[in-house]
Amino acid sequence: MRCWTFLRSARAHALRVFSSDKSSRSRGLPRKWPIAGVNRVVVIASGKGGVGKSTLAVNLALSLAGFDKVGPVGLLDVDVYGPSIPRMMNLKDQQPELDEKNLMIPPINYGIKCMSMGFLVDESSPIVWRGLMVMQAVERLIRQVSWGPLDVLLIDMPPGTGDTQLSISQLIPVAGVVMVTTPQDIALLDVRRGTEMFRKVGIPVLGVVQNMSVFQCSNCGHRTHIFGQDGGKSFAKEANVDFLGDIPLHVSIMEGSDMGKPITVAQPESHQSKAYYEIAEKIWKKL
Ligand code: ADP
Image: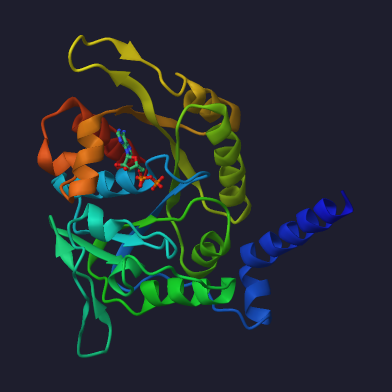
């Protein structure tokens, strides 16, 4: 019991330190400044893994890039332990080249500039790193990449509330975070924690996206709420944040991600893709 109290107060202290720029400076920690040539940064986060955060990040990047009003879009995967963007964006075997300033040039597919730890390590080799190494890797993926010019950079976070989340909040100004969850209680517990953390470090919460809320049988059309129905909506209400939309559970979304041809590229007219466009539109309005 005492151990938990200690852990909680240590964590609260860490959040206070990281959320205070002045405090960071006096401790010799890096200062917050924007990424050169990038207009806005939006973070895609979740409390739990496997809720569809990377799939959302990829399809939102593609949706935004398809809007006339939006300039170039980039996608940064800072999930250093389980990077999935190279596979989802069909850039699996790419290795970034260096420009004349020794900055990494992000590989491009479907018009999106992408960067990920997955480009720098072998997909099958495990990454065993301590917190400080993770923080340094995240800083490199932000500062040692020739990102600009970009209108929007989406950052695909690892799940949870750890070193990466704190690093991002400390290194760069972020326009807002989109929280992703599935509707069941076990996922909602974690998204609540994640939302609270982003609030504490001063990142505005743009809203909540509910993924995999409804499955429609392609034979008979019957709709089933496999993971529950409105958990994400009730959470949004309770946390006083906007509900940005629902993405159905659909095999084409999974196949698209796994094959490196996201649904918004493979089937741009499908109702699944439209769900992503509508969410992207709402996010853009908020930016
Ligand atoms: P996370 O980034 O939260 O760990 P992913 O985006 O990697 O989750 O998704 C986990 C798995 O679920 C992937 O195989 C992905 O293709 C699949 N998936 C995500 N969203 C959907 C959806 N709406 N319908 C069907 N499969 C989905």
